[in-house]
Length: 110
Picture (tube, rainbow, N blue to C red):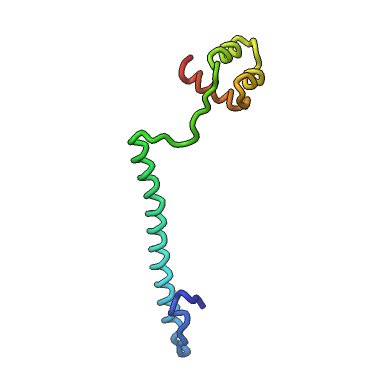
């Protein structure tokens, strides 16, 4: 018995159970379709809000970390004067962050 479905709490004379089963199945289908529609609406609203915010120029995500002396360290790394680990140490960032910044630099065409 489902307490939220009143049809499951009704005592039915023998031979009439199929009617209650049919009504219960219909109720479950209707409630499932309402729940699915609500779920779609809930998923759609944030996407619309994010799209509007992006159109207005809102930036999402963590702000980019500022590093001092990037150009000099990057140049030395490109010339193979220092390793990536040393470059990251000089810039006070992790090596993975250094490689990410290198990729961004290379995409920018420098």
